[in-house]
Image (cartoon, rainbow, N blue to C red; front, side, top):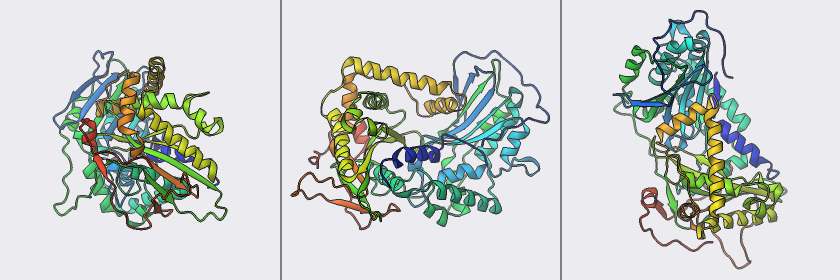
Length: 503
């Protein structure tokens, strides 16, 4: 159908690939037939220029270092913006727009329009933003900018093409699936955010069984809005946005929902007060190997403490001889690398989950998980990094950011994300890294998840309540809601209830 850049499914697949070894358990490209008229040129600035249109859309323009035109229409949001009973619905809506818009000429689909202009069209769904990217020679700017406008404002999703969409999504889910590891990740995310449910990162088999065309179109209308979007354009020096395209985006008004359209209930995440333990029931006859995960809510993109989080994860994962390698050994260190999973939330207020994992024989998986949990707790208990270590970690983060921004497509996504979430770079010192960890990563914030049979009890007399989930991510029995602190309370650093002691 299309190229897929940094999709949640791709990130999820990479995560599953990394974790699955713990236990036993196209872009379209072409050449245009007739280039559009040359655009009016004017001197381009050397730095990104940002403006807001009357519609609420942010427009960011900057020169292209390689002389190639690249543009994206990106909207803030992620898995937490989906209805709880239809995970992955926004991702389906993004793909649905690729099947047709009311602006398509002569029955051409969007991918064919991009091909005809000599360019390529990609979808984006990465937990922070979703939308579409185009890339082509500079002569194709007008038709591809018009294509982005049509994708964001005028999808049609004919019923016959909807069946094609579902068939392709079913094939992808059947290939990648959730499996025990994926279910463990989904449960870890949902319980770390106090939601009391699993949060898959993309469409599930159950979603594809119950979703209909109207669900997808309603979600598109809810989620694709100019006030939570950015149009980012990287073009050769001298480029000027065509006036008619700019006017069309300025007049973009959110699509109205039917008066009888029920709004999905989207529960806001919170931070648990008390460590929780969860087990994914499996039918592994051997019962000798497990995958175990520790998760905690973490600052999202744009949060003032995000730089501290990223510096901490770089320091924890340092190799050789870094903290994680010291507690789990060199063989497990790569697989226990901390993952920061961004999950959206309200199109501009991000939240993430920090996830680390261990696996192997039951005893070793349990031992490693306790070690990882304690490692996070140590960061929350006191200032661990030296000033030099904090400075080195920040330099590494800054270097990674420069590499991401320099890439042709992922760089545009990174720039758009920074504009949507108002990212401000800081250089966190050791004390601010500790302050972040104390608020977010303390033991009473952690969710521990076992896929398999590892026993996390520390002695024979200990009785630990475990919530049991099936392999589809459903609670085996009703559970009392856990005690939680709203994120707003945490972000304002207001006093909170005293935490239950660690398990």
